[in-house]
Image (cartoon, rainbow, N blue to C red; front, top):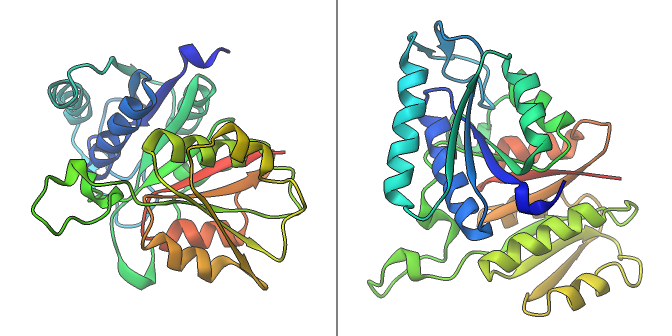
Length: 277
């Protein structure tokens, strides 16, 4: 499928976390000049407020009909906030995981919300989010509840509008042993649309030429490499506290590994899980 027909797609379930994810998805769609697709999946009677979230514990029931109203309200509010954005709102009775996986086929990125900031203890990964992130054909971005537009930009100190501040870095966790062109390309492309620097964290030394073609393809992107002796997980977690997006990979046909799951739980910014060979 041509990327001209792709969308940024976000799951809407009536919960506050899903609406925060929709706001993030709208900004991403605007950056990438793509349509925004809002999707509510499942039956109309009371659904869990965490159906699209990461946290599957202490879910809050959303009364029947609220998801329908929330979907319509989200579409209206986002259209006011982003008047030039092409917004498509859709409902389906298909259960959440298969509906989201099917939607991912036509998406540039699939966006899901989480249950919020819980500090160093993190939060458990719910079956829907993990199932989708483990099987989707396209990148899945997990956005924490309460994520604000200014959280992805450098803090302002001179009173200027936060929307004019530069974007924080995109951080890429890269395994030197993986053939990861899709992963690297997504990270470079994301940094480019934000005019943000790209920080690449990897263990040991990358094979010669791993990043060279991408540097040539994206000459305007500032790239910094950070070599870590051993497990880079702690370095990635530390970098996520000062990043606009953390990008990690998973092998096609496999779910995120233990390190990626830990980063999903504890990262201080949205996390993109990208399938690659």
